[in-house]
Image 1 (spheres, rainbow, N blue to C red):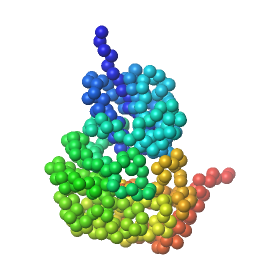
Image 2 (cartoon, rainbow, N blue to C red; image 1 turned 60 degrees about the vertical axis):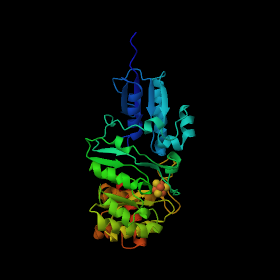
Image 3 (cartoon, rainbow, N blue to C red; image 1 turned 90 degrees about the vertical axis):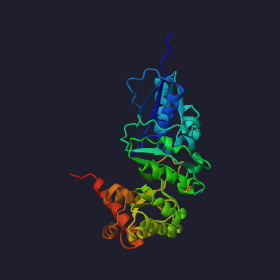
Image 4 (cartoon, rainbow, N blue to C red; image 1 turned 45 degrees about the vertical axis):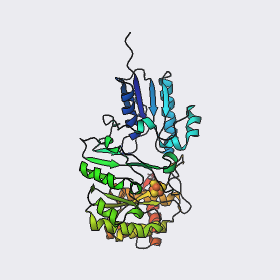
Length: 366
Ligand code: SF4
């Protein structure tokens, strides 16, 4: 009797980011290594690939907690469609809210990383509809800091290095994306730099580098690799001196463009956001404002103690309509004309933008 070829289906319920689900790409390699000759399919949402007839197992990932309802619906669709398949649920949202997932699906999700898959390189033949020009990897997991607004500790507890990250690199792709949470804290920093130098590819640590750890020695070492762009985070005003020192060091040692993530809507005020944006703009640094959302929130809008829905909406609109890719560019003139010259003007502008947007939405009466 000829054994039936095993089939596996990997599902990304919601595709909202430009990057494919790395966890599923790793699971694909892991399955192909464990079950020689098996077939692995990837899909987004409820679209079942025509070639799949009877999957042995369906893996469903999750990302944002506010999309959890859709994750639950997707899981239930596959459970009904393939009642004999075992269904596994994982990913960040499921790790943060396992009880909610279990309540909605009757399935207890996997919390955290799957050890076996974590050790495997991503399967680059499975990119879930994305065009990839970069390998994706982590040289470390977790973060030694525990910032109050961050959920890294919940799904990547502790901090450890990944010695074998080079195995994740696809030689045919020109760039490498590192998704480390805090690479500069890694004891492997110098040896990682050496390996990056040897590979000769452009690299991007796109979760940002910790400006507090970016000193002269680090800047010198970093100048030997092709880091484009250089990213930091300006999460609160207390970070100002670190961010300014780090950006100055980058300029002295490397040619890379500097981008800074600016968190807002946590415990900051709109005036405090204006202050940080103004500091960056005055120093000709690109600012990338990022709205804080509670990691376990199941709805998208969640105004912090000093914000409201109108201000949040207006801030989003400014990034959508005035700035390319949500980033505040260097021009001082456009910064002033959009956000004003003082914190008070900034708040007034946001309310004006909000009101103007409302008038656009109003249906004309005939
Ligand atoms: S340094 Fe970054 S990754 Fe680490 S806890 Fe703070 S926000 Fe999270």
